[in-house]
Length: 322
Length: 305
Image (cartoon, rainbow over all chains, first blue to last red; front, side, top):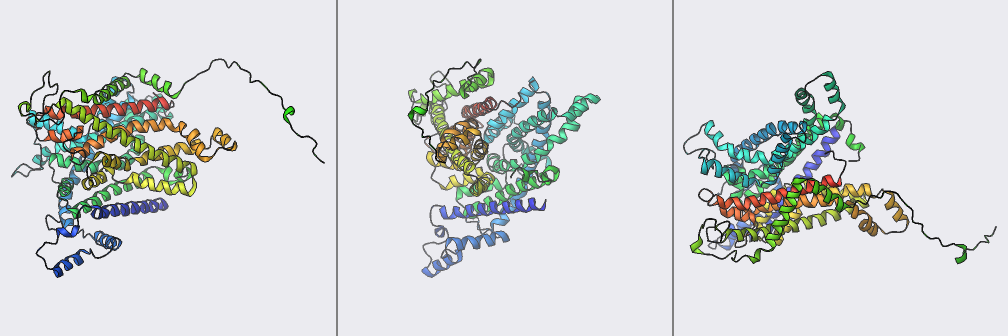
């Protein structure tokens, strides 16, 4: 068990290092000279020299990368070019609203996709299954931003039920108001991650229903729904842990697009704005932060999975040559 | 003891190959399997018919009497009519023509990205699986890292610095999607290279490259085709997201994604402008996804229907 965790930790470290190299490389690749953003024409050559030194531009790329990484690990992500404020503070201030959005949509998508997948698998090849599978196909194939736009058209432009952007109405700060603002972004985000989960649970349910313990329960006289929700559910839930981990990727990038679309004041829309302004320190910090959320999501899912599934603990993986 | 027998031409007797009656012969090629599966499935028929129509329509886009980028004040926001089946946009450009030209770009990007992805992925997968050992382990760790990267995020950031153009878009899209194809083809190669016919052809003196190209490649075509179909779908989706964020295809050219970006500004007064390109993306991606699933069930008969 410890060996598995250590191996995963090593993998996570490598991936994070790669992400950091990538995000550092962005400054190197970026068009234009970075110093030109700090140096103005009325500075004396000595002052310009000082700025260059302060930015570390007289050192080699590798040296600067190591220095930057040291600071980044300590939590110092530099100053924003456009706001002149510490990047870490600005991102941390916006993180809760992003986590709120991601967390809620994760819960919504799980709460909806598990029962739907179970029922679709149970009623395989009937109209119920066709409707649910069709819905999953739809969710898989629609661009999330487009689904969001359609929601805005329907609920804001036509029905005038829900506000189209932001987190609060002007001057109002009640949970109910925030909840109303959250409905559309949460649904949009949940839909795209639901599709894969529904399909997965369905396939799993079909597999589980042909197992012998189901037959035994049936012979005992257990009703279909009890078998489904008491016995099959537990066995299909296991792989869901991995799926949730994998979904972190779509959640992180989904929050980027969906926050921009709905004007949600989280780190995603903040980073989008920073890309527009070419504010590199913010972009770098954002890549590191969301990369971290993503990698940690996968890491936790892997660990949880090996706790939940005793086969992994016993090293079935090793036997399969993994 | 000295061997007195020396083989010469007359030691051998020429034999004619006898035609044997094998009874019932099932000739079921890959294509026949696929065709049968598509015919049997109404949804798949719909997907194929839709794709044929949309690809033909996009290819024939230059036949349209309108210039996709031609401005016309008088036709600003013209409603749908016989002359303009989808109406006109904020610059009076014929929306139907623009949608067709946008489809050309979206499909071009989708297919090219898929092609590059499949080429890179298959090559790496076959090499890794065929050679095996340390080389395979290293290459697969590298692949795993690419699978773990937050691809969409990096695509967005990368595209914001690169000069937006179709080739860079294709390169960026394939850079982040070859890894899963490599994983699939590697696994298939691993199992294929142990098969008797590969061993036999190795013993007959076939080189490694010959075996890889002649014996392994044709046999992994099935899973590769499935990956390709799903790959087009995801490439079109990613392209539309990037273009929607303004990081893909740029003005005056349009893809379906960038048309949606344009329509977003008028979403509250002219929602219809957002409907057409979105529905086109939805149906196209849906069709490729369905096609991928149908291919999978045609090629992997063990899946219980």
